[in-house]
Length: 180
Image 1 (tube, rainbow, N blue to C red):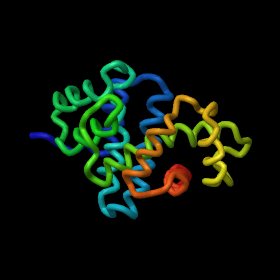
Image 2: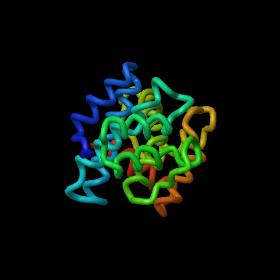
Image 3: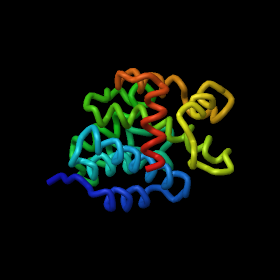
């Protein structure tokens, strides 16, 4: 019988396959962002969104070349709910997966995953961190292709489009969720 993990169970599973503090922090950040966004987009399902966010890169540290493929196998072996698996695998759509995000939560995950990295890097550069940070300063960093070069602007733009948002609107939503 498959199950939907709680955020605590999701973190425990993520830590089982990830040891790097950065990967664990990223999982927690994306989980937090999804949980915060769920408060307005899918009230009552914050824990579900959070768990998916935490699990999204469960396979990345051990199998970066098979990202999302291994997650699919691993989560099936762990008897995780099909909806969770679809959401996790779909965040790599067009990158390392052919599973398309179809539900709102999946599109939010696709859109926010990369943006959290860029926003985190921008906050690290500021003496006040996230305090007082605004979307317009995030957008300046977004436009600077050399800044956080590993964060794909194309993926962020595609995610915004999936959600019917502009990139600045997505920046604002993601930043507010990270700061909550």
